[in-house]
Length: 188
Ligand code: AR6
Image 1 (cartoon, protein in one colour):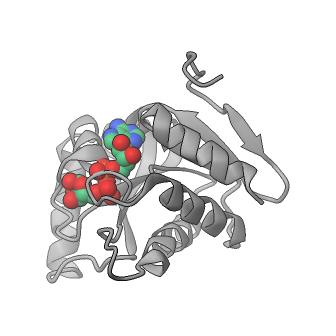
Image 2: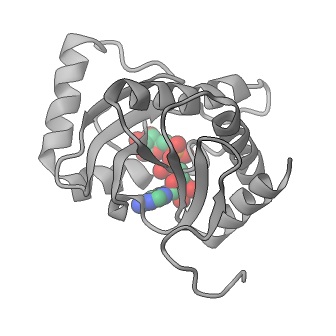
């Protein structure tokens, strides 16, 4: 199926447990879910990649909420591996959960921090009562994480994290990242 047009919804579903994992090739800002996860940076003030897209499509309410969070809780920035929620503004979702992935480094194993992004995002989603959550491939863009490894960590962490979220979608922007998540989902 690689190279062909893929449906924008649920190309792959895995329903072996309470959480159903789906892969979607597309733009996360178009997902109708309770919560969209943003691969942010610790400033919470926006950036490029998926962060830029979420702020552009979601409008100024998201940035305003991020500024408030900085003032109240994260004057030094949101630490890597943590997650925090804001309004989703004009996105077709209720919340954006901002998480800060680690920058990839060959000299140091930061996998636990990347896994923490998924765990903490699901914990925040549970606090919110979100039933459906869309994740991008955190750290696999500007932060330079090798895509297969990023996909393996993402899938294995979601599989092993107890959560009330019943619909987890990985929304992958490009065919190569989609293919990496297909491989990760197939590997057990
Ligand atoms: N929908 C889904 N995925 C997307 C979209 C989109 N609209 N746009 C890009 N991606 P990145 P990072 C994919 O760079 O590596 C920002 O400046 C992209 O192809 O967005 O965690 C932040 O402010 C890639 O596969 O996030 C930080 O400074 C994946 O999303 C820094 O980038 C993640 O790429 C974070 O870097």
